[in-house]
Image (tube, rainbow, N blue to C red; front, side, top):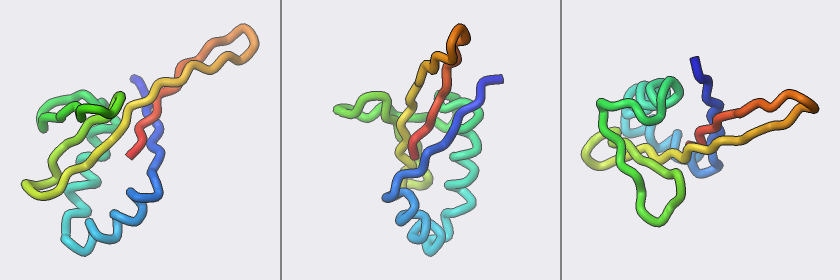
Length: 89
């Protein structure tokens, strides 16, 4: 199974307070859990954002969305090459 590491941006950390105040924290956590398993899984549908490389969004509700970026990193440890996958929320 592929594992993804989540990197939370400073803005996401600030927005977490607002999301909780709106009562959407459980929906946002459910979306993040789904994205950690597979950032391209549907449903719910995701949208590729124009003008931003490897950036996608999913709707929390009609007014709010969760924006995330998918990054791949290849790490070389001597003779061993490992790929790491990151999600930036």
